[in-house]
Length: 457
Image 1 (cartoon, helix red, strand yellow):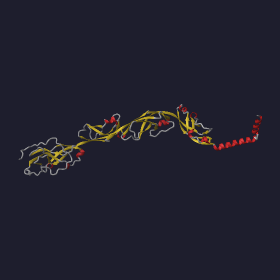
Image 2 (cartoon, helix red, strand yellow; image 1 turned 90 degrees about the vertical axis):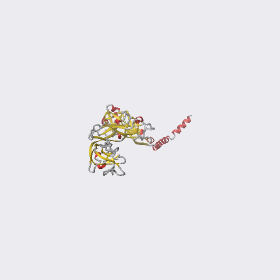
Image 3 (cartoon, one colour; image 1 turned 135 degrees about the vertical axis):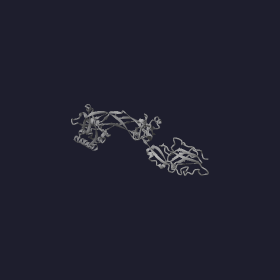
C-alpha cells in the first residue's frame, strides 16, 4: 500500500511545474476557442415605452400627453448565441409616472421579458417626457354611420347603438374639441337584420378625427343592431279640395318627384299603394300664397315605414288662372247647319249680317285661340221645313263656355227633283268647314224655333 501511495506521489509531483503550465495553457486555449466560437455581442433594439403607475396622476386629476421618448433605444449585451435569439418583443421598456421629475421627465428602465441561458446587460440612457393637463369628462351621443350599399331591393332602416351615450375622458383641451362620437357600420350586400360590435371614434365640429393619448372611452366597443327593410316605389297623388275665388279657375297640380321609394316590413308595405298630399284651394287666386309648398314625406308615412333621403321632401305647385271674357263677331253666312234631316236644305242670313257672341275661359287659352279656329253652327235636329229662330253654338274646348248667346233665323226647304225650292244663294251646309281641334260645346238649352209655319209640299 505504501508503495502504491509513493508511486502516485511520484507521478503527480514529477515535473509538477511543467504540468501546471500545461494546465494553464489548456485553459487559455479553451477560453480563446470559446470567445472565437461564441463571442460577446451588443445590439440596439427599438422598443415602445410603457407607462406604469398612471394612477399617481389620476389621483390628482391630471392626464398626460407624451411629448418625447415614446420609443426607446435599448442596448443589450451578452453572448452572441443569446443576443441573436432576441428581438424587440423580448425587451420591455417602462417609465414609472410616479417618479416624474419637476420638469415632467422620468427615466426609462429596460428589462427582459423572458429568461435566457446566460447573463445579459441592458442599458437605456433616454428619458420619457410628458405634458400634464387637467382631466375632463363629458357624455357624448353615439352616431351610427353606414358604409356601402345593401342588396338590391333593400335599404337600411333604424340602426340602434347600445349604449347610445358614452363617457369620454381626457385632457381638458382635447375633450372640449369633441362634438360627436361615430361608429361606422358596413352594410355592403346585406339583406337581413344583423348586429355588429364597433370601435367608437371621436370627431370635432369640423368632422375631423380627434386623436390624443389622453383620450379614453367608457366603452371600447359599441353594439349596433341594424334593421334591413324591403324597398317599394309608390306614386304621389295630390288631392285638391275646395274651389278658388270667384272669377278664377283651378287648372292643374304639379308635384316633384312623382314617385318615391319607401322601405318597411312586408306587412306595412302591403297597405301602402300611394302617398296622398292634401291641398285645399278654397278662396285662392293666382296671386295667393300657398300655391307652392314643400311637403315633408316622413310626416305622411305610418310608423315603421321610412323614406330614403333623396325623397324626404316633395315640391307641390297648384296653378289657378283668372277667367276672362272675349267677344266674337261672326258672319251669319259662316254659320254651319248640323243634323239637318235628309232631303232638306237650309239657308240663313245675308252676306253683311254679323252675329255677336261672348265666351269666357282662362286667359292663357282664350288668347291663343284665333278667330279662324272657332266654328259656329246651329243644330237642325228635329226641325222641318219653314223658318226657325235658333241659337248659335260654337266648337269650344271644355275649358271655355259661352256666356252670351246669339240667335239666327234660318229657312228650311225640302229638296225637289235634286234642286232646292229656294233661290237663296246660301248653302245648306258650309262649303268648307275649318278643322275642328276642340270638342263640341253642348248647349245649355235645346234650339227652340220661334216660328213654325206650314210645311211646303
